[in-house]
Length: 325
Image 1 (cartoon, rainbow, N blue to C red):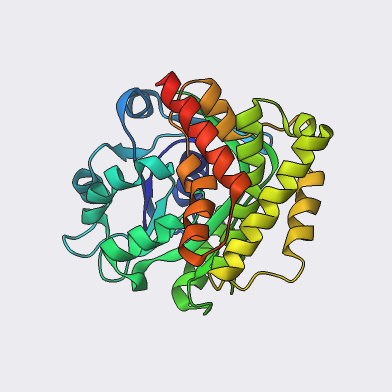
Image 2 (image 1 turned 120 degrees about the horizontal axis):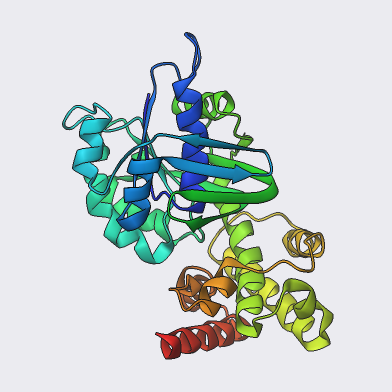
């Protein structure tokens, strides 16, 4: 099995490192026996990975690997011994939404007729982008629940008890390739779930993260502070209701109690929790607001659903990010 990890940051670096470590020690008969895992990375992070390796500091254990890594897709394909036109078996795509377009050309040499592309990205828009470029038959749906970050070049810190992947075919079938990927995740010790309704699952995460990420970012306060303010709580709930209405108008088969489920998830979070969008905005890094709140607004406009709270938060974050640029 050949696995290419596109994006070696907190998410891709963490899950890719687990796969690479398991492949190195895999015994005959294992799903990862004779597997090769490679990373597409850039800049100083790539240089440190090549020189010193990739270190993972996790609540589940600390370890280091010596990864196969490159900044060019064609070179990574060569290092993974992928025959021209064949492609990797699995492309694990873990880039920020604003970096997707720049990653597509580098993915090209790694995508063949039988390649499965599994995106672990926020939002849902990337599915259409990947389908247009590589064909719907190669694209899976996926999401993950994890708190992890690239704290410095060559070092990833993973801090949450939860660190699981949910994935599946866009049409809900449980196919042999999905089962092979699940077996590889199991061999690497990655908690996972095969979903027969992955698009709805992705929307449920988007509904939550658009409200949580949007409100914590625009307020620059942790989740508990947002929910503890009566107006903040009201706007949060309205953002959730708007996103649920948009998803249903778009034909997504959400659970009947989607709003209640999202709010239950919210209330189960640590009140001190912050969002990656909040941290990125505070650090003057690019933000994913267009892939989160912005997606809800765009789909709402497309399907005739008004989204005033989502739109206000989108505009406020975009304007603040532009002012800091």
